[in-house]
Length: 203
Image (cartoon, rainbow, N blue to C red):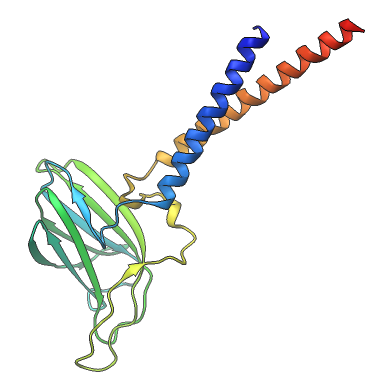
């Protein structure tokens, strides 16, 4: 392979690395948030809501959903991993509200949202670590809603990912980035070797 081809490979590798690392950073920096607003795709017929934390009970939280202008109270039932709820949905906006019930302790569960079509095929999925404050201590007090846990170091766990179309994408781009680093390293080594050979011949 000539030096020009090696240089071209190096440039292409550098550009691809920039694109891949930029895409990875963007995936961590932003993503649809079901607590604020999420857009359900065409074909959406049902939504699963899961709060994953060992020992979490239905007496601790209440979950409400706003979907395309309609509201519904989501009934949450215990599972091995926490709580599960589901409801019929239509394409359009979705917003979840998660509130602590009176006397409930503060918790930090993982929220997993799965959107399915009428045949039960997954159209979209997401996860988010939540910070749910303690419930009201006195009757009549308004509870504070759950918010994304900004102190969590594992937000990029993928997710299942944040509307993580998320899960599984990050390992792919990391593997590609690693392969391109090897190519780029080989290219630099090849160019240096050619230069060294030419200098030696010139002497």
